[in-house]
Length: 386
Image 1: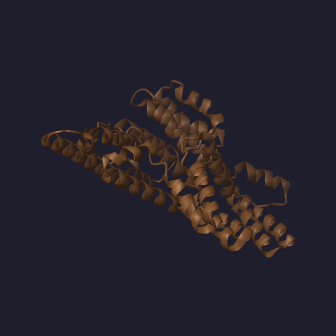
Image 2: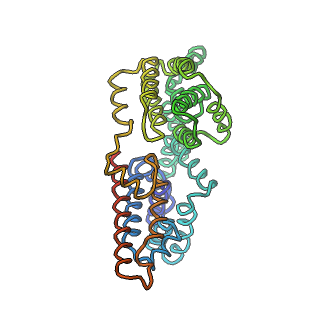
Image 3: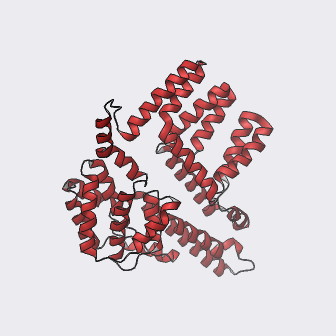
């Protein structure tokens, strides 16, 4: 849903405060919405509304709604906000903006642009804040001073490095700086860390048999793997290994990389838990491997127990298993697969599409549709609870 916050605040600011409001709106929208949990809550709310429409809409209307596949909320946002703030031309212009920015999720170029914008704001919001303050005050001196101070703040915030005047100490600090390693690791930019985590993830995946494309995709998502890195990450995944020998080797590499950074240790184990749970269950073999890695990197046992409780998949009840059976889905299906199958079943079994059917046939179709909707709602509720 990002950059929903930036665009919304920027348009409101532009309408009432001009260019000053536009700049302030971009900054506030990023910090208060797009950078916070609020953006996920908005997305969940929209998905809930979309689900309710699909459940309650008669088939003669649903078949038209289904053709847009839910990609309509950006246009609604753009047309309503544009009309309220700027009239007819605002309605037209921001209807188009909503379509391009929010209602074309499969367009890789647009996704990349949005990701790059968020990355820019995340890494430069200190300097941007200084720039905006100076611009609002109409002072070139404040602009220069604000940008410089903002840059120093961003450098300190992201790199954790002091601006030490002694060159020798500067070089030494940059070599051992764990916060710099942390930033690079979380961004998927530190090759040694990424190779180590890819190897450990591959060993976990191999524990239950062949590595799937889905597991590689999950890794790429967790570690923000860039396009230019995907080929060698795939090579790491596809290199055969003797599990426990390699596990020990890469666990020692991870211990060296995280030795001075407890936060990185914790986040690394969290991501390994997520990789181990990619198939919907963590086998005893995988859990032994995770314990081995945690012990090697000296992760606190209480933290490991908390992560195990948090990230290990909960046992699925018989009732929930039946819901998956109703939709014809495997237990490890993700939200995207679940929703796609549900939409397909609605089209097939919707009772309103029956023409000249007997009362018995209509009753059977209605019961089947009710069963499908209830099963979908139970699965989504369970997924949300996790």
